[in-house]
Length: 280
Image 1 (cartoon, one colour):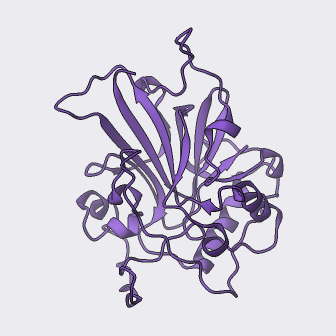
Image 2 (cartoon, one colour):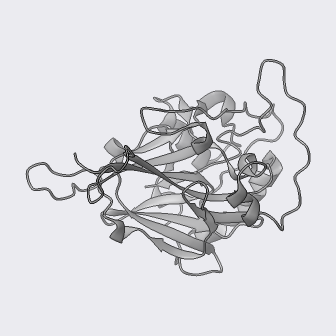
């Protein structure tokens, strides 16, 4: 297919859901989190709805008609994405209501939704007993992994490769500028319960077990992503000027713990600390 490949990489406490033939990504209002978007090097803090429907992004196209195929979540969504059914939460409140949301992102339904920076299901995601945690584990059982980053794949046929550039990666984050522990994450998960139409979101992580195993960022050349494309806001804060500008008024994080022998000294990131969800 002519054009360039476009990845939209979704990091942090977002809730993705099908909206007609499109994908709505809700950004809840969570304390100390930044709603950030853009390409690396020119990312900015966001508010309100980010409507990408006019960019010409294309998902799956019927080769006979040239028209978009209807969404097929069971086929198009990787098993490494945290997923639970809409019936559990009854739907979402108005994404334009600042009482509950920083904003949202509206995009066409993608070619695929893939879980990147994925960790072992049994060692990187240890929820307390409850409906949502069990739904997520059951859905991911065949894959055996859960991802930290959701990768939305598109083609952009209206743009021809220039100077050998055939790939564009756009990032969205809803993350704090400092690493969170499990108690912080549980507070965030409790906060987002107010975003739903009924009180069924019972997900909390266990605190009385060994901390979930960290998952390191990796390049995925088959998807056009590098190590830095999987990094979280707090991992980029020291080296990325655009992230430094966004977080300049935030307290400096404490120094990272000593590196474990045999592992790089990167802050711990795993599906339990950085969940991103698909609802439906």
